[in-house]
Length: 476
Ligand code: GLN
Image 1 (cartoon, helix red, strand yellow):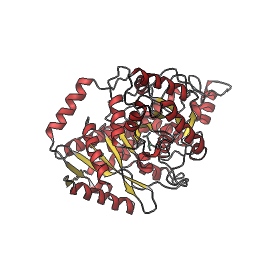
Image 2: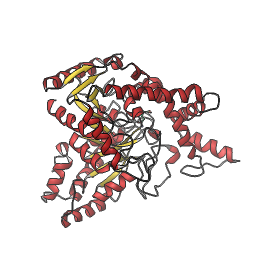
Image 3: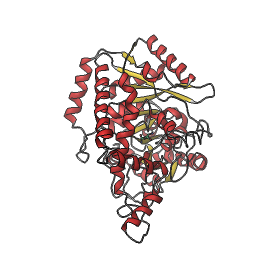
Image 4: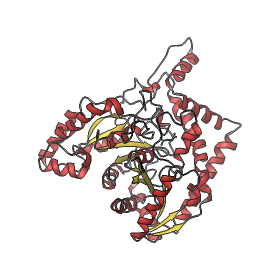
């Protein structure tokens, strides 16, 4: 019996290298857990029928002595990441029949390492949501308490890792979709610097915000996946060249003192759950005792982050999703003329929340309102980014709770979109300004629900995030 609960990438690698078990046996162990738990938790939309074939190929690589850390490692992948020849639908009715014609760059990089793809994980329709309740295929449950949501939109990836249906997983972030479900399921979730991981082959939501992102049990595993996937890609026009990555990182590293954490309390003081607040303060104390310097930050512009996100994101969504017209991809329903084809296909294919955002985005970008909404939001986005950059002149990290509350009940917030949007409140600044952030488990509520804090660093500060993250793991 493999101890899946305590398994990490490195432990699995060592065991496979030592011949304790093969990737086929490891993959089968996960498939067995999926067979047992997925009916109920519903982390996976589909389990790939060639998972064991992929594992055999990885075992051959081990035999040849060329295995790397990710060879033979089972991954769950969110349903908005393309894998050639497999369905990819972003859990949206409009894309259910779609089959990917190429590999996303992040998948290509993992294939080069011999990773094993177990299947596609569930998510909110088109990556819009914070609870994985709007998927075309059905809801995913939180493995820590099945009456609760796993968070979203990468809730399937989170639930898969948290219930040992997969060793690690990939999700995507537009605004918190990896950090928030990681927090609600007791995992580590990294939102990389914008431009670090290629967006080529992700089903786009908001191009200026999207990033693929790892979800793991430990910080070290997040680091391994990040290091493998953080590569310049000519297929993504916003991918940053290798040269600039290093320069940027060294620049920010040299200009700041070490071990200094800033806390923008007025940003998150309102509306915080009591247990989240208590746990956050305890986490700060632990860091203080471990030698970190803690200072307060006044960052008055952060409070506009969510409002700005909910202007910029729908504008980009309405543009991106116009390609799903009932003609080119996925679902196509007959109509008496072209307009009726559009109306029927899009009206039936997209869920309610997606339609809401397309309408909102179309309105925001319309002639009469473009200046009033979109342009104003772009200016404010820049102001927020400048405020964050200013803060990093005096601190190394900004720290906040990852989410305002622990996992909430299934059904809750479904009739109140604004309450659902507020789940993203602490996530938005990093996505808007393109900086990286990592969510790390920080304890549990009295009833055993996971709690989490996030550390945010300047652009290209991932290695500092991994460093503080590993330290924080030892303080829990
Ligand atoms: N909760 C965010 C939203 O609904 C999630 C977006 C994302 O990161 N994919 O927009």
